[in-house]
Length: 420
Ligand code: ADP
Ligand code: ASP
Ligand code: MG
View 1: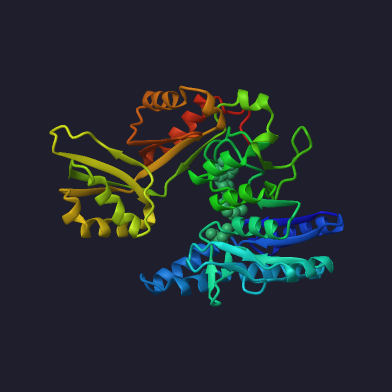
View 2: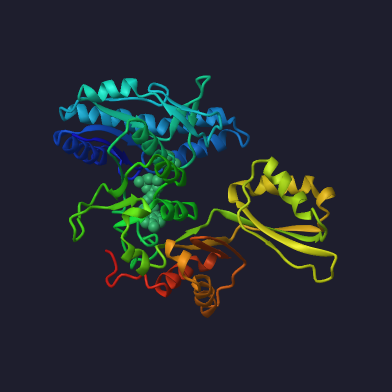
């Protein structure tokens, strides 16, 4: 007998027919003698719909009430799955975030999970009942409903798996694993049998939305065995495995690490570029820009500071999340007397494209290859950042698909046959 968590995303839960498909998969695991907790997303499109209602109701909505509204999508699917399971003769009940409870901090709309009480969950599982847990939601110490940020059901699933010491956490989605890049953009993307926590963390953080970044960080910290697989397709690879396993680096053979320089490519259209023109070039100037942004809890990602050709002033360019652009411009305008810049230019038609791979640690020339491949296609690079296992560039949004395809080929990642 194993203890498992099965998580189903929005596409898998979209409508009663698909919920029946999910219930059949859950039933199979129960019949195989496993104890099963299921974490579910809202139906595809539902969270967007609920977010829009909040925006329509007021542009300055109370985040605590926003959470009450957007958490409801998962309440619906958890109840529906429990009903369908019961109809199939599988004992099941739903456990809402506040019922378990899943304790979070009070950072509404992007709350972090603290602890999960497992007493009632353990008792339910021991009695042979399937526990259906709505993802994405939790509760604060003063009993307010919270949500974990978009895509947060992955994090709920990993947190539940860690708390109940599950043998594995299966993330069922609408693709059959993690690919070398988004298979919807590059049909020749290849499925990865295994990917390390570290690589997955980088890939997710630079835009591979197949897993929420925080879920990967948590899985790495708690050593949860995560597998990504399809709700719709049972194809197995040559070794009889389904999906992609997220594993420790020690579990990937030396040979593969030696061979594979780049694991994957991701892109992110959720950033906006800001340029401050003519910032006085003196010690402390950069601090006057980024301190007020940090105080406003705005995450700055890429930064480029040009040299002051006239010895007096320089331009500073950086990126912030698109959703924070208006607030960032407001903060910068208020700080203009201390920063001393001439004017601000912003641009939302940009994309960050990143290549990720642990092989980069031991190989030079990855960045140079990237710059050359993009230059050959006439794609201009507006900013660059690197980490030990990642190189990211900022380009004009119109070249996104082209850039991803070109880099995918340049690093030899294309599969021989395009996936259907
Ligand atoms: P769910 O609703 O199941 O949580 P998501 O839409 O959040 O599903 O994530 C799955 C999607 O992630 C896929 O449909 C795919 O388009 C996208 N994706 C982006 N990058 C990758 C990648 N490297 N491998 C697989 N899927 C990816
Ligand atoms: N329903 C939430 C969202 O769309 C959480 C999730 O599906 O992971 O962001
Ligand atoms: Mg998701």
